[in-house]
Image 1 (tube, rainbow, N blue to C red):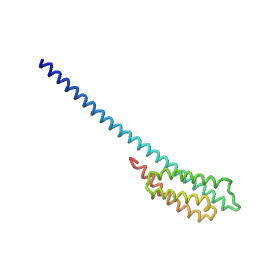
Image 2: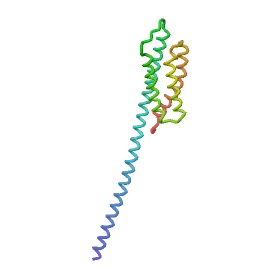
Image 3: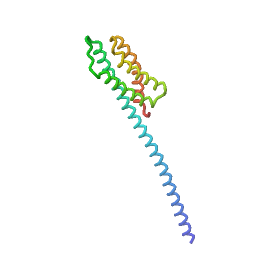
Amino acid sequence: MQFESSRLNALTLISIVVSLLALGSSFVQNYNYARNLQIVQRNVIRSEYLRTCRDIIDAYFAVKQLGYALNEGATATPPTLEPGSAREAEAHVFKFAALGTFLANFRDDRTRESYTKLSWALLEIVRETYKGPRADFDKAYGAADASFGEINEDCAKTARLEYL
């Protein structure tokens, strides 16, 4: 009888140990799952941010190319501006501003302000500055290029980060 009782206690003890091991294993699996989910989410955000960086660089240079075409057309004798070319340049500025707004949402207020200032400067260039002499136009783009360099550096720093 005592043998059966000790066997029953050993079986109970083994069942409890197996249950505790299974409970501990489920906690470890839950922790690993949550950690992996966070890594995947950060990676998705980072890749979206970097894709938007690529798109904003493309939009900036499209604005610049169209701005130079506008300047050449406006300063030619006689002026040779194509209808709708100014609107197309403005559309690229608005695309740049939209992408900049998205990127600025990940950054501080100072960075957000620099994106906004650059967008307004580009809009001024494609609306008014292109009509003036090439030297004034180049000067306006020089200031825009300096601001854009900061944005580009921000994107480059983020590309080097492991996590956003």
